[in-house]
Image (cartoon, rainbow, N blue to C red; front, top):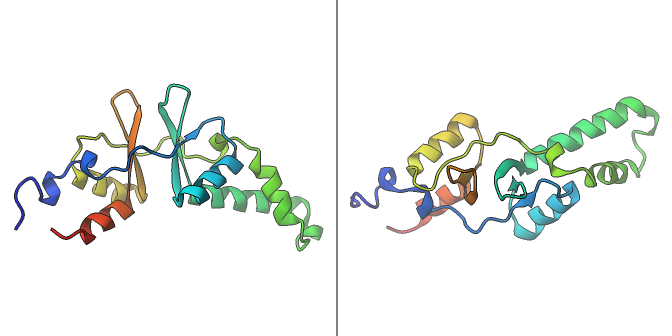
Length: 158
């Protein structure tokens, strides 16, 4: 059995959070977001304002939802062109210039660096999310914890 400092209930968020964090600015475009997601091999990016305060989180799920909504809107207006090859490009072109704020979740669940890791696990389960931005009391983004971090922790030999 581990010591008190290594038991899961004793671990703090700061010991497993990813930092520095790849992030988006609230004025970045959806195309910028897609590029960042691909380049960094992540499925979520926190969104900050000019003061580096967290204002939201953009996930692949948010983007898929946005594309699905746009596709439905286009189908409703242009059903006759539903199978045209350019529809996908039209959607990409239409959405790519939108700011990330049009797709992000604006009230993400957050945690503090000194929170117990178990609390973050419970937040993920309760809110059915895979990413928790880590912020200071002033909403400054300092890290990110994902479900992959829990897998990494479990896979690490004691």
